Image (cartoon, rainbow, N blue to C red):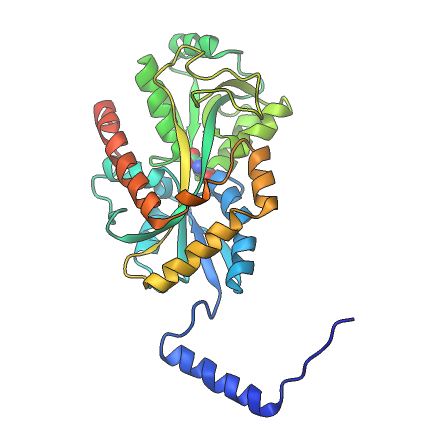
Length: 328
Ligand code: ASP
């Protein structure tokens, strides 16, 4: 039986005075609802990862955590919005590898990913897979390359906009094969996947968080995984290297951000909650089933996150510049 404890009136009054003081002085964090902004549609990979960790983070923070999808311009609309938000820890951004490609893709980007945010920590690294619509002719990566070559006017490649991981993967495919893709941009993977399943677009490259189930259910054609080794959840799927695209390797890392100037203790509270969420058995099991895993605990730090963002920005810049892709 649960015991109910009734606070004496004097204690209740003291608590009320205390919380009023808290509010005046900025107060203990968190004292209200936290919003995690997802820069792509609901149901896509970024959204899936965010919603998985939101609940255990809320439990750790003892506050409500809501997820808000702010789509547009390959994730840059949401990132710009969070960069401009109050640096108080109540507006948090979940973003992926696109944080490192956007500065090269968007010469007029309104924010600087390294300067305008505090990093909270890395979350996960997700393999990508090339998949085709159910009635798309090619059955293997080799057939896909030949088919795109022979039908370059009509074949469509779905992505989630310039700055999306799917756009980066398409760019790597173009660089590796010398082919040009007709890209069809969506606001996220979820609407792209719906059209792919309905044979309205031909192929895409996206994260295993959203492609594992359609691949295992034989709902789509699967061509290759973009990791150096095959992955346990899809053991029959060849790697891009096995399929002849040795240089095409990419995994999509995700991280949490708050606006620059957020107090250190707030970043630290969010980091502790993130680290706890990534040890939650349900989170681990679900990510494992979707072909990924939480990053190791020693990498769930602002320092590791900043280092990765910097090195990835440096890695992708010349590749994007060489490909000559810009958003304007
Ligand atoms: N992660 C996807 C992409 O970048 C978009 C999404 O999360 O919906 O292609």
